[in-house]
Amino acid sequence: MNKLFLRLVMLPAGLWSSMGADTQQLQAILKAKLLMDDRKPLSFGRQRSSKKPNKWTTVKNMVFSAGMGMLYLISLFTIPDRLLALTVLFTTFLFLLTFMLITDFSNVLFDTRDKTVIFPRPVNDSTIFLSRMLHVFIYLLRIVLPMSLPAWIYLGILDGWKGALLFPVPLLLMVFLALFLVNGCYLVMMKLFKPEKFKEVLSSFQIAFTIIIMIVGYFGPRALQSASFAQINPKEIIWLPYLPSYWLAACWTWIGVPAAIVYTKWLSLLAIVVPLVCMWITVKVLAPQFARYIGAIDDVSDGPRTVTANGKPTRSQLYKKLAVLFNRNSAVQAGFMITWLQTSRSRTFKMRIYPMLAYVPIMFVFQLMNNRRSTLAETWAHLPETKLYLFLLYLSSILVITAVTYLTVSDQYKAAWVYYAMPLDKPGKVMIGAFKAMWVKYLLPFLFIVSIAIVYIWGTGTILDIVLAVTNITMFAMVMLRVSFRNFPFSCPEQMSNSGNKFMKIFVSLLVPAILGAAHYFALQFWWLKLILLGLSAMFLWLVADSYANTSWADMRKMEME
Image 1 (cartoon, rainbow, N blue to C red):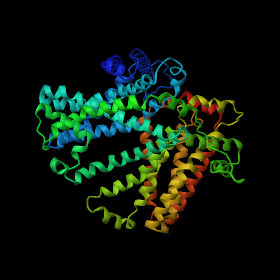
Image 2: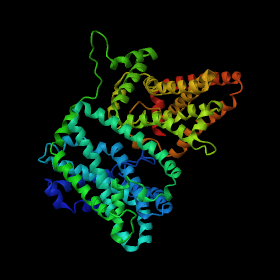
Image 3: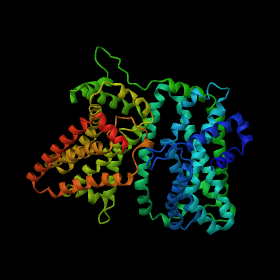
Image 4: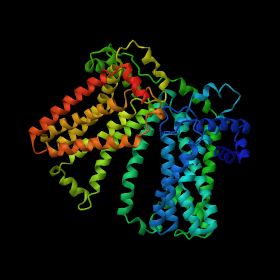
């Protein structure tokens, strides 16, 4: 499959050569990268004991993407106007591709590991940049082609062989458009910001865009439904001709599909011109100094500054005070400080945690909007009369599940050798310190803000419920660590996580908070019962935390063998 994709991207070899790339070097680099991609283990299934390279990674991922593509047929089924339905289809794809480029594939673009292999060779900047662009392009094709297969078949049935032949053209143009616009923005950012600031700006941009995509994903379908989108006349949407996705849909006028807007056929030319112009500008104008920027970014230290001003410690030393405040043992303090710093430096960890901070309130508001018996204003007015604050509190368990799951995995897991070089009698001391750092840094501030909102809306009578819910959530997180994640912080590769029964673990992780919330709900009318539950939960939390903190080397070896 990779050979087919490689031949496809090398068809316009003359175009790449005109942009300054060495086509032989470009093909050799892409061939090596694609070969390494197929040797990566899958992100699902048990990979702990298997050391054989997985040659079917690409095929399996494409089959999964084809199944997901069935969801994108909704617009073609529900919207009568063909071009408007295709606009919604391509808009959905563009959002998906942009989201993937910003969250996942930026690591491929800014991968500094090539610095030791390719940069010392006589390879020019255009070749290096195009190799990364086309590598990501192939990645996207692996996902987009099978995901678009249901729509491809459906349009082939509607429009015959002309529609089947036409569909790949706007699809490829859409991938080019998303790829070069996003990475063009990245390269502009590299020119505007200094290397020491670029990583910080990039992380903030990625997190903000992830949250925006999350909001659009939840509230977009409801907005379309409330507007009776299927009955809208395209002529009434004045901003429709300015959408790139509408330019792509306008290509169907080539095979005789009617358009409500008269000049739509001319807009189809923009679907061809704009991606090519963007590609040329990106490669010829922005890429010449790409290698120098990558090298400068790689040389920048991510560590926090500890410079003092006027004899006072800077904010970066706050974690040291907190480590001493919450821990007495030196090993626990070390685990606390290592985790605090690593969670601040790891862009991957922040990309997974920070969107979850926004997910909880977004999900809560989404549930309020789903009340079809009353408007949102009426639901909000009667909110203090309900017990929905329990749903909000226990919904925070999603943040806990995410934080605990990714507390032990990292791309730089090989650096965990330092734990084994330390004179530790009980490695659990470092692990409990890591949990405390995660709890103090993320869970405690988030639950504090949620608690203020609950007290403001529902009154001070909810304070005991808040304390009980926070104790239950913390106890649940500790049980998860004790049962499934008895490892040093950031010491395991993600692909080798024990996920043979991953579905069952996810099911239990979602079921347990629901059970705790149900028990809490039934105890709402009895303050003495809530006190009993609080005592039991606190006692169980202490026992599990003590057992986790006393994890021995033998316990860790036993966990690795399971």
